[in-house]
Length: 458
Image (cartoon, rainbow, N blue to C red):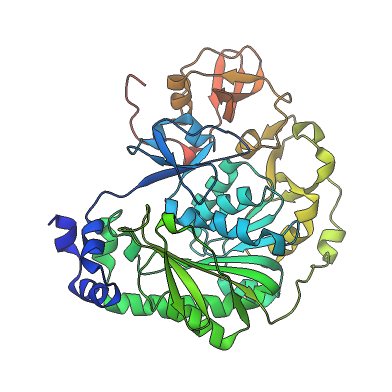
């Protein structure tokens, strides 16, 4: 018996014994090493990173990793070419593919508890970059990490907010899809994160179940009639999972969705009164602990389209640096503080409405800041899939030089072009430097820089 087994809280083990007929196999599986997996960004790359083994069967472009790489030491990770994500949570891609014919062509999506961003980037890719995806995180420090990961994924159809769930409910039915990956007791993280074991208690799990219901109740009015709710947790606790879905069905109109998992995937159906949830148990499915349930909303109001406010209608016309992006006619320009941002035309009205009502850290694609004598490009521009790479010269670096750049250094030869240069590695852009004579200034954002000491031979 491993230390992981002996560390499990006795009340948790007792409940699992009542909950699962094969509890001994479940407990044994928690003592095994966790699975590692990554998901490739289809807009930036078609090949998985090194050391990938089998494909994740329920999510296209996702792979299991044989041994855990040090992602920090791969420039392609920083360039947003892939995202390390737990395989079970990628099941949301299967849900989207299953119900795609019931969603609008360009759905409005709210990821309500979105940090650090794995599910938001998955939704963005699964919907082909055609959706408007609003990713919310109530804790501001986590919201900035969420923003960084969204920016590196490279789409312009995203907004990042930092607001209470109730703020969205008060704005009315703006969304066609709402993902509530609710804060939970974290039982599904036990073999991945020992701290989750130390933080677990019966009282904490009960408090989580109540908090999850408050979140659902506070945000429910933000989902339009006919809209899709995806509810998920990383716990095995029925009170946080099936019982919460029964509670929702008792107070709202919902049509639960049969998700038809392939039996070979090892996913466990959990029927409840009126519907069915789906659990990833580590002794059956190749992933960590996860619960998910999907339902269409059958009550409430149809989705509303926010009208333009007087402020946005009367905003001054901005000078549009159209050469920076491909297909500039598909965007509208806005200013967030002193930064020019390009919003997809189809998303602009909703993004503007959101920004006028809740704290917003990102809307669309930040282009840069017009200064008195020059235009200072934003880091997001280099990482965007919409950037026109002919707009600036590119300084291509080797791996060690690229890691040095990401660390905040500059060890490469001086680029030939004076002024602004994009910085790239193996066809992937990373950020910016500015060349002034023989001096090169590194403009990679300080808060994104690699903090670990770089190995000498990389």
